[in-house]
Image (cartoon, rainbow, N blue to C red; front, side):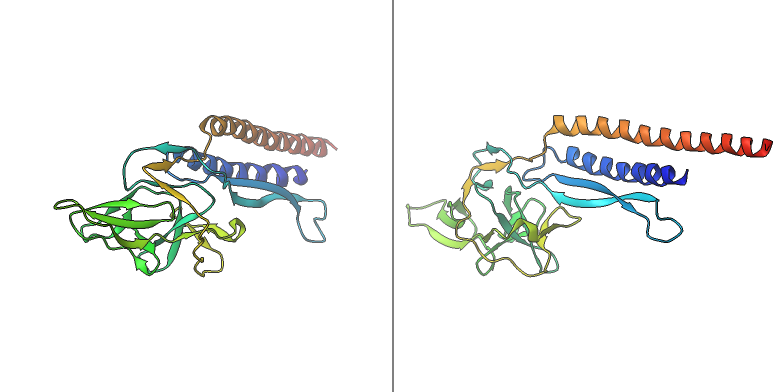
Length: 246
């Protein structure tokens, strides 16, 4: 009897976790550059001589869907989207490096190129500083150039080059802040083949309709597991009554 309880109990627990993952994906269906999270489960036998036939459910794979989102034209000079596989490198508050495809950039009060969340965008030699009263252009290879907003037309001044990386997807791990890092803790190398475009953003790769259907299926599966637990309880009660009569 307890074999059924183990499977139904742990199955219901992990369905709740998968519902949380699907809910997070739905909440980020409109988040620029978001990558959907994927969960998978498998049955594992309980280790131990007294319980060789018991099994429970565990996380098999917690991964990420790295398929690209759609490119949406915005016309804003500081909006950039990665056209190929690859990432923008940003600097965290502790000085470490992380990676994102959220290319909606801004200038800080100190003239530093940042993400909308306030993280510094890394260049070849560190954060990219921008002087006042200039217009910016960002080239396909990530080169950031400045043009004066007043006076006679002059040649552009190269301020730096955004660090674009493309580490193997299997080496990346998602943090609680939604940013990706290398599992090894090291910094990824600059990749010359990563191309970007300005005046555009990449949408989330979450399919909202598919996620909604998945939520409904998970709710039905959870209800099925709870019914199994109720049936196990009912069977145990009836078995106890029969034993009591004997």
